[in-house]
Image (cartoon, rainbow, N blue to C red; front, top):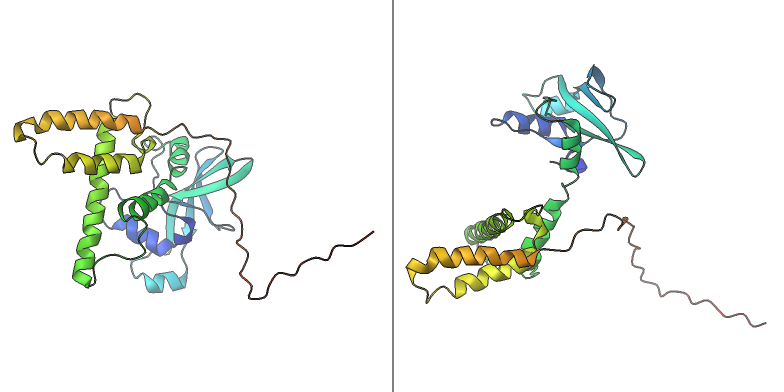
Length: 236
């Protein structure tokens, strides 16, 4: 799932061709020009996109046209569109793809969890050499995914609870505490202790999200080097 800023037919085609079962899903940009190949429903259609000469010059394997699937849906009464390479309508229903893209912003929370929870909001890494920096980044990604695996196992027996509904910060602290206290535990007791530990992560379930809450984007005012001008009070 790509953000709208990554819209590039050359990039999307390259992503789709490198490997098996690699697909993409991205918002359609405004003023998108396309040719309808097949109308699948009122909100779903198969379209043909024409690539530019500049894109074909940059990506040598990019064909003159690409076929994609254009899905239209409503968000608070406003029309939205997404493009995808998932052309099989039976395997990938229209409503499922719309629901899937609504969770794209979850990756932003993942970045925040790594920077704030694991790195403790540090601006820089500890390593000073390129090889050690790569090692630290791989260690960070490994630790993040191991915590996520524990959250997935903890949410599996809970009915109607997704792994991302557990607090990452709380689960991360629990994982660190668990490994720090296992140094004096007998190896034969590890499986039992680990099963107990996974069951305790359920207590970190977050409250249900409120669908009525809204955080519209706003433009941050530019800082001025001049002091603000105070208004003079007018006397009657």
